[in-house]
Image 1 (cartoon, rainbow, N blue to C red):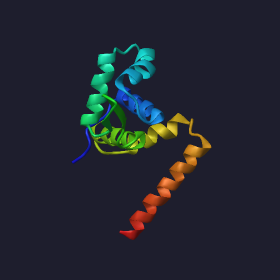
Image 2 (cartoon, rainbow, N blue to C red):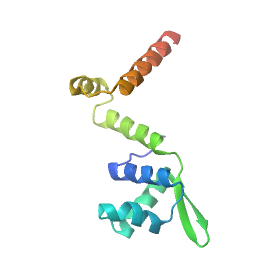
Image 3 (cartoon, rainbow, N blue to C red):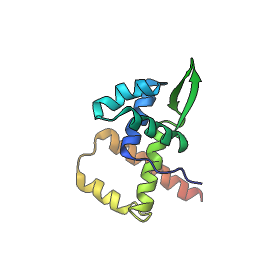
Length: 128
């Protein structure tokens, strides 16, 4: 079964948790929520939603819950991209590739990563 989709704000929260290893709701509300104008209750709802989706876990420590990433932002990003491709692009990456080619702002590192990806895809095709 595919993982549930994840929104932009949830992905940002997941990055925050990944950077901070383990945090209470109060710590996340102060460090992540306040700068974004989010109430503590909103932050708690987001964290619990991420937990129900399997991206975050919590552990009780000294009478409070501490939250940490279960999968990390990279897994969440793959899920978000996969959902976007399936739902928005009807499973085709061609529109995305066309957008990338027109964008013209691909760094050398990104281009090298794309070339490596194409090489891996070609190798898999040859194997099957």
